[in-house]
Length: 399
Image (cartoon, rainbow, N blue to C red; front, side, top):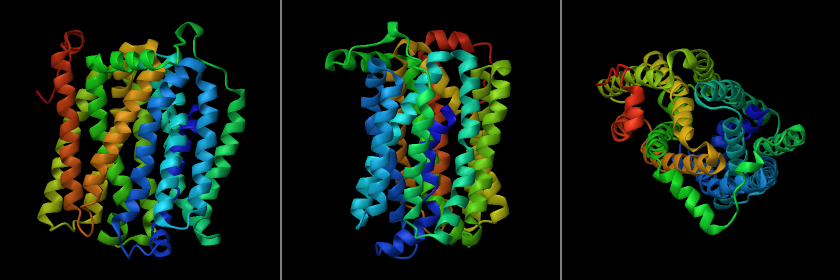
């Protein structure tokens, strides 16, 4: 059920990727225009902004009321997108849609933190993410099938119907917020809660690290259609290629869930960064030496491995970030999620706006963002005595 709740967010992103050409034509954006990437980035901005409100609400009134409020706004955004007569109104509706999706994201993460902690939480998060990643695998194919039969706006109506189904299913969900952890929903306590989370070095440092990773993910979502259809000239194969890359996310999440408790969160993070940084450097080298038009069979496997490795980083960094602030699970989940989504949307837009007919801007952007994420992890560990002591016996390959 938690996976399905989180999937509302993914469905609102991935289902409409095959409709980008139709969106360009419907709103006279021009063939190959990168403007369609804004359909993704404004959704992430809505996700970011709303979480700052949903978090304190979830800590005051419980997880379920917030889920239902978010679902109602999600439904309004999906319907508004389906009816939008102009591209500007479509972007506005997508922003509202993102605001609604934020409720499901905050609730899902808070429930997991309510019931698990440490390695068990990382394992649970990975199991949820493994199911959650089925959406990117299937959504583009479903979206292509819908467009082949119905008008392209039907992809928005599909999301609206799915939101209703998930809401009805979640009626059987038990409230997970401990009454002892309920916090007053007033301005001063709310600000104090956010301040406490922001002052927690481990939480703040690891959250900043995930912002860079989210930037990579956002830039990929916004650029994948241009890269696959324009650079590699494989438009007909887009749903299959996108689904295969997403499958690596699911595989990574499953493997992470199986090994994280045995290996340890910090040791696993170390090993993944030791592989990730050289991978991104190799992608840059491949792009530059081929003038931005590398072999599809070389570039896409490198990209797939890069993105798949995120499933060994995101759940574990999130777990480590929320560990010290379990008594503020909703607030902490909201602040970290808002920062990650907003920062990732901005960074992802900076990268995707430079992608047109070459892989080089994308490869360079991904490499720099991954490097920034790794540096944040190192700085956080050195500035946190408790964390430094915890990881002191773990060999850091990057050192």
